Amino acid sequence: MKTKKESPFIIAVLPLIVIAVVMGVGFGKYRYSVEVLLILCSFFTIILAMLYGTTWNEISDAVSEKIGKSFMAIFIFVFVGMIIGTWMLSGTIPMLIYYGLKLLSPSLFLVSAFIITTIVSICTGTSFGSAGTVGLALIGVASGLGVNMAAAAGAIISGAYFGDKMSPLSDTTNLAPVAAGTTLFEHIRHMFYTTIPATIICLVVYFIAGRSSSIVSTGEAIEAVEMIKGLSTTFTFNILLLLPLIIVLVGSAMGKPTIPVMFTSSLVAAFLAMYFQKAALGATITAAFGGFKMNMLPNVNAELIPSSVQSLLQRGGMSSMMTTVLKVLCAFLFAGAMSAAGFMDVILNKFKTFVHSDGTLILITVISTLIVGIVVGNAYIPILLCGELFKDVFKERNLDAKNLSRTLEDAGTCVIPLVPWSAGGAYMAATLGVATLEYLPWAIFCYTGFLFAILWGFTGFGIAKLKDVSKPYTIK
Image (cartoon, rainbow, N blue to C red; front, side):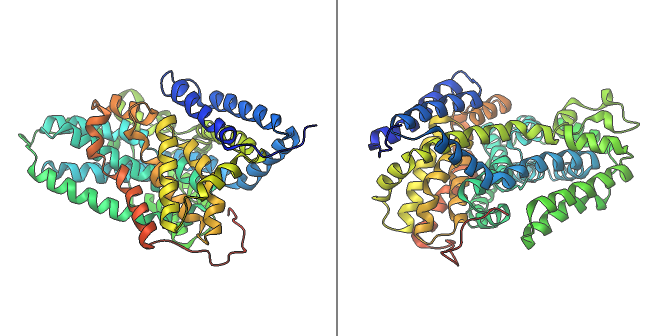
């Protein structure tokens, strides 16, 4: 057995260089499986760690410890899938989308597009789903109304990533507090400091641009009309369908444990589905596990439902979150190897030499997260990696972990659709028919968040201190 020794900085940072190259080429160019690429990078790191005296048992213990501490938070992903499936079946999400679409106004199209996709993304927790369904309908409307296509795409993407950042149903919104060591609802509440000003800027810019844009006609929004008609003929709407949403919002505001709140909301949604949509008990169970399907609704002919409505609604279920869970587990293998070998400590000590204030710490965190995110084109890795890298430094400076989780979300999640070779950038460009660099200036929400994070870091506004320095980070 070799004696464990401290590695030089170049060796400690080598796994980061490798993962940047492997993910940048393997995933960014060839779209190979993220999970397999993570495993390859993890075992490269493990071999390197063993060369410097780290044993397999130490690595195994480090990985197990990280997964064990985060298990309940990871388990939230399963309940996210359950809640989406049952909300779809009950008609809660369809009703919100239905009334959201009715907000369309040709003279305020950009503002309306931002608000509508924000509502949908908050309810579904997915930027891809929001942009690929309602966003796709909106971009068609924009074309018919003569609205600038780049501006329309930017407003849609901004709204879509509002929910990806703020919704308790979003995978990255659940992942960031796991990586930083705080709770989901603490994380969401703290993000309002950067999200509210970013949203205000979006609304002001979209309002001014919308009033001055050349809307040449007020043609009928065929896509939106088709979707409204399809939703109204498929579901029975009632104000009581807001109960599942109210339960989540109230639970979030009161700081109640996430899993019981989500389960209660799903249970109420299941009963509403059986009462209002006449769904069978078996259908509610199937929707909770495998996601919502149109054939779960009795007396509804799926063939008569517009394809845009079907693609919008048929999603969710516990099983749909397994890929996300697998990504997280594979990333923990890499992070555990880095931690057990002491590579993180070496890198951390190097970065700490540049930290002279809370502002410089947040600035370095933002820059590091942006670099990793831009290189690998994925939100999971920068959030997990930079969370592991900086959480002890935040604690040493008496900063609450929710400051770190907010910064990771601002710089890690929202910037991805602005990277042309990333999954988000490629998907948005292909779906909306607008090149990434064309809609980039108009996707205002995606870059104003981390700018405010840096600003608040240097001014001290919205920076939470630890109330009890000796209190360890826990996940509720």
